[in-house]
Image (tube, rainbow, N blue to C red; front, side, top):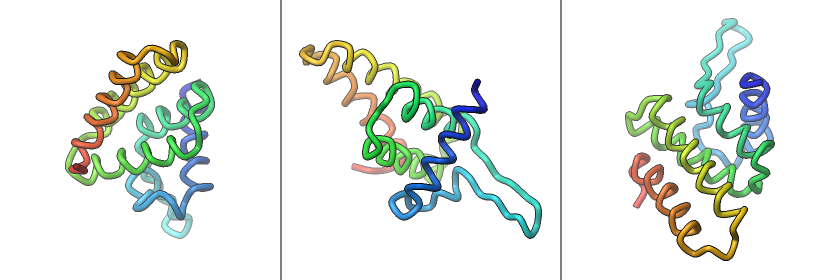
Length: 121
């Protein structure tokens, strides 16, 4: 099942290629050299956001860009994957209780953590 979500994350990168800067940081396929570079955990979380959690495309693209920035800023795949999972869990809670300001604020805080990881103010 994890691989299916990973492939959904790859699909997100391909359909939003013009909106996700430096997406090759997360996924790069070179058919000529027959090589592949993949940050599976990050891609899986992005795929889960899109398919399982039903986050909007704009949100998924935004979070993919933050993930790329965090990796480029020196964070490991695992660290970024954990941050994305925290965002997913906070988003699920907030969507289940849309009138709860505290849950919405908690979601914002988790996104801010990933933003800071990428060096984005």
